[in-house]
Structures are given as C-alpha cells and as structure tokens.
Image (cartoon, rainbow, N blue to C red; front, side):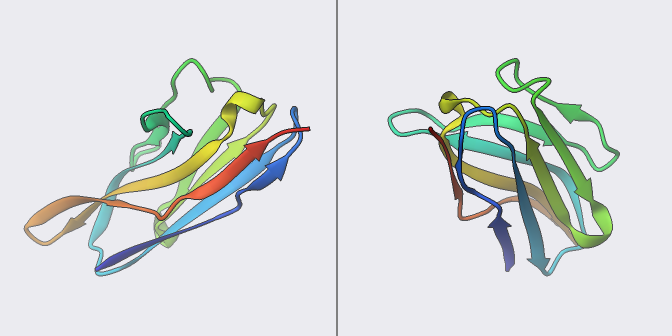
Length: 119
C-alpha cells in the first residue's frame, strides 16, 4: 500500500500565501509525475500543477505565476507554494503521485486538505 499524507491547508486572507506538502510512503520503487488537483463545491476536480521526476512543470493559466510546484525525490514529497491567493482558489486540494513498483505503475491520491481564501 501507498500512503499520501498532506499538510499545510487552512484559512488565509486574499493576497496571502500557503504552502502545501504531501509525502508518499509505503512500497515504492520510484515516483514519476507528481501533482496537485483541487475541487470546489459543485465543480469537477481540476489540475493545479504537475511536475515530472526531472523537474518539468505544468500549470493552468488560472494559477500560472502565482503557484509553484516542487518536489524532493529523496523524500518522495511534493510541495505547492501558493502566493497571491484569491477567493476563487478556495477548494479541497489533493496531491497525486504516479507510483512505480516492479512490474506495475499506478496513481495514488492524498486524502485532501481544505484551503479557504476569505477575509
């Protein structure tokens, strides 16, 4: 089994910052792509940021220039630095990892952490 443990969510005022972390543990040979998704009430889950094992990043226009994804391969951990937060960034944020074991590759999700941007 693989466990994905997230931390760092909370309540922040518009214009503020938060940093999310997500650590993967368990039977892991390596991890390919890691990322963050979010889901607001009544909306579908949407991509926030992706990072390959080599460090190539992808962002949608809605967060580009405000959010930064990074990872520590030695710790199987992915981070999301969120700056200039807006009320529309309010959502449950989920981390994702493409986990590699011998003979199989699969996706693993975190349990979600609430981010609320409000004055």
